[in-house]
Structure formats: structure tokens, C-alpha cells
Length: 199
Image (tube, rainbow, N blue to C red):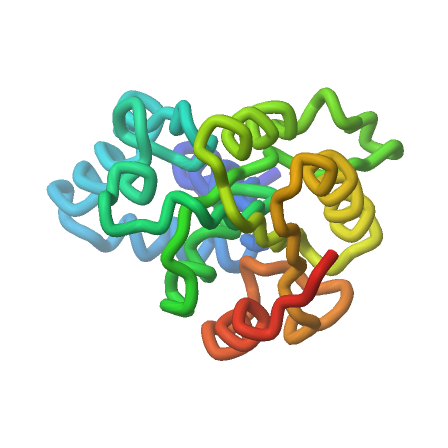
């Protein structure tokens, strides 16, 4: 039986369900929130609520959006002939922070993973093929994670796009094998984009 009030214990339990948050971190966060003013806590609660009410998926690239298109797809300064393919929307932020990429993105929504029952039809691959055809894309950079599943998915993307005559490249090996883009630093990502090779 917990020695904490049920309301506080419930908040700790909910916070500990977040990725990367253990019981001790959740407890520190909960106690910190308890010390904050009611207005600050209400602003946090409103921000959390708003992401479920206002955020959608970009109809063009499957990034997170507030409206039909994400800010990147809506930016007229982006190079529409260059698409960087990533596994998840969370992979876009570190690539953007690197400042090395000025094209558009395409979020696959996962990788090929037979163990997780995720196959080609579960990815936004057909939508990528359609974009390449319709927008006359000149190069597709595949920036899937350097894992077995990421490499297999990269090869599938190349197999589907190369017959269309588009240049397909892979980010260079500046990203350590087994790691994920979300945790890579900006300098490493910039070098990876600059040193990309044919796939």
C-alpha cells in the first residue's frame, strides 16, 4: 500500500508511463508540479490537452501538423525536388536542428518488422512513390535508423524508387549502428547528410 495520497500516486503512475521516465523521475516531476502555482499547472494541462485537440497529420508528408499541411510543407523556400525519408515524425526535429537539409520530408510511419507484424502495406511507401511521380522529385535521401529494420526498409525504398529514374541516396554512416536519429547530435547529423551515398 502506498504511503502517498491516491491523487499524487495516480499522477506518478501516469507520468511513469511516458517514454524514458522511471518511477523516481515521475515522483520528482509530480512533487515539482505540486509546488507550482495553480495557473502554471493549468497551462501545462491545457498544452497537453491541446495536442490531442489541435494536432493532426500532414496530408502531404505525414509529419505532425496543425491544419492540413505541416510548417515544412507550407514553406515556399523549401526545395520540393528533394525529399528526406524518415521512420517517424520525431526524426525530423534533429535533422532540422542540423541546418543541413532544406528539402521536404516523408514520414514512413515505421519500418519493416516481421516480429512486430509491420510490413510494406503498413508504411506510407505508396504515398512516397506518388509524390516522387507527381512532383518530379530529383533525389530521395533515405534517413532511416541504422538498425537491421532500418536498413531493410532503406533497401525496400530504393527498390521501389530506382526504376522510376530518381536518385536514391542514404545518409552517411556518421550515425552509430544501433542508435536512433532522435538521440544524435546536430553535428553528426549534418555530416551524415553531407556525406550521403548512393543506395
